[in-house]
Structures are given as structure tokens and as C-alpha cells.
Image (cartoon, rainbow over all chains, first blue to last red):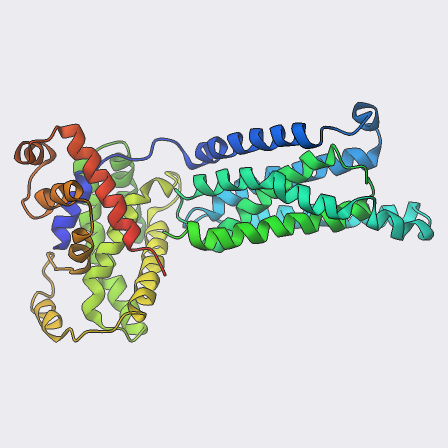
Amino acid sequence: MRTDDLIRVLAADPEVEKTPLALALVYGLVPGILLSIALYGVLLGPRPHLADLMSEPRVLFKILYPLAVFACAGPLALRLARPTGNPRPLVALLVLWLLVLVAAVGIELLVLPPDLWRARLIGHNAAFCMVMIPSFAAAPLVGALIALHRGAPKNPTLAGAGAGLLAGAFAASLYATHCPDDSPLFVATWYVLAVLVVMAVGAIAGSRILRW
Amino acid sequence: MRVDRDSEWSALLRAANAGDAPAYRRFLQQLAPVLRSFVRRMLVRAVAPEADAEDIVQEILLAIHTKRDTWIESAPVAPWVFTIARHKTIDALRRRGRRINVPIDDVAESLASEEGEPNLLGLFLDRYLETLPNVQRKVVEAIAVGGNSIAEAADTLAMSRGAVRVALHRGLAALAARTKGP
């Protein structure tokens, strides 16, 4: 085929995707998020007295911190999904959030007697947390990957990891409303580990699905 | 000069994304020679056969076509174009690296004789075209080889214009999917 002929063919197909990529990501995420909330409602439900406990700083931090990461991960995933998207400002913001987590751990170590550190770190149910967070992340991750499939990431693996962070952060926040372990020591260890697992799955899936 | 080129490309692509087909065609026509020299430079640097250049140019054009909504209207066009061009050239080289390199002397010769002509020949798209569903292939061929418009292709193939458009859109998406990186 001659290039001029190809250009004629391309110009004859003027249909451009009307939905912006950001909106497509929202459409992709919403069903996954609803599915995960339904799963959460059936399997776990919120912990007893959650509303009363919300004034407790540790509980508030545990629920809001992943939401803040979620809010950064959305724009980050979108930038990673465009050929010329610049992820740096959002990565910087996420590093800042990481420092906030480090500070929270530091404060916890200051206010907590050392003989309690080990118990708080291990918590009641670390293994359960490591299973539930990836489970609640699965459906939103699939939705995000389907949406980002329309993009053109410079690095599909990174874009997949970004989708994993998005899904994992949401799942962490959702699980936090059930989880009885409130210490930042627990959150910084097991929540982070669980989200890293989701990011790794997203990266592997992205390296296959998000190629273009 | 570069700024001029970018603002012209921006204007054309903005019009194109709003549905202006002639502007889109002009945009792609302006892109083709620039991409051609870009790809040749990359091939020289990669010590790869230059005879593949036109195929890669066509793959880039196809990628730009299917991904043209990933350009943000407020951003410059050229960096977006060249990021896609580099990405697809590397994909193409990787893919070809896994294939047995058949002698391409005759192709290289015919290309060299057409050097400077705007109408160079690529071979890979034709091979991919063979693998498309019948209707999609016929529609693409009617427009590419037969030089038909959508309306003419619809008449020739006894299809509705809408069906021709859908088949064309899907056919191009399928062709683009064949050029994915390994």
C-alpha cells in the first residue's frame, strides 16, 4: 500500500473517540468500585461503632490516607497512559504522602511504649488484610485497565502499575473501615504491602494489555 | 520555523478532531515526509535495513490515527507525534528482530528509485490486510486501492454508508492492533 493511499483511508475515517480519557477511566472504575463495595457488604461490613471511632486519629488516618493516595493515583494513571503525559508532579506528591506516612509511624513510635510495638505491627489479622485488599482491588483494577487500554502509554508496565495503585488505594480505604488494627505501624506495613501486590499485578497486566 | 510548524499542526489536528476530514488529510500529508526522515535517521542509528522505513512510517501513521484522542489540545503536537513515532519505530524493530530477515534487495532498489517521491510503497500493511475479515478488507481496499470515497465504496460494495464507516473504523483498529510491540 502506498503511503498516500493509506492517508486517504485514514482521512476517510474521521470518527474520533468522544469520551475524554479521564471520563473513560471514571466509567471504568465505577462498576468495579460498586462491585467491590457489594462484596465488602456481603463478606465483611463495617466494624462495630465505626461512626464513634471516626474521631480517633488513628482510625481517621487509616481511612483517609489511602483516599488521598487514590486521589493522586487517578491523575497519575491518566498521565502515564498518554504518550507525552508528565507523571513527575504527581510522583512528587506521592513521595510527599509517603513522608506523611513515615511521620505517622514516627509519631506512633514516640507515643507508644516500645513493648507494644511488636504487637501493633503484627496486629490481629495481617494475613486477612493481605487477602482482602487485593480482592477488593481486583474489579476496579480490571475496570481501570480496560479504560486505559484506549490510551497510548509510553511505558505500558508503568501505566499498569499506576492503575494498580489506583485500585489498591481504593481497596485499602474500603478495608480500613472494617479492619480492627488501627496503628500506623500496621498500616505502613501490611496495607502498603497489599497495595504493592496490586501494583505488581497491574504492572504485569499492563505490560500485556496496555501495549499499542 | 519549528513553532510555526507546531501551530500549523495544532490547528490542523484540532480541526481534524472536530471532524474536518480535509484538514486531517492535510495534517497526515504534512506529517508523512517528516516521519520518513525521522524513521530513516532512527534506522541508520539502529543499523537496521532502511528498506523497512516506509512500512514503519505507515505503522506510525496508523498509530497516530487510532490514538489521536490522546493528544491534549492545549499541548504542542510535535512532541506527541515524535513520542509515538519513536515508540512505534522501536516496536517495529523489535518485531522484525524476531523474524527471519528475507533478502529485500529488490524492494530496496524500487524504494531508492522512488526516493523523494511522496508516494512510497509499504508492504506490511498489505500483508496484515489479508488477515482482516472480508468486509473490512474490501472496504479498506476500495478506498486505498480503488480510490473511492465512503459513498462510492458503499455503492460499489452494495453496503450502506454507515456500514462502510463502521467496517473501515474496525478494520483500521484491527490493522493498528497488528503493529503492537512484541
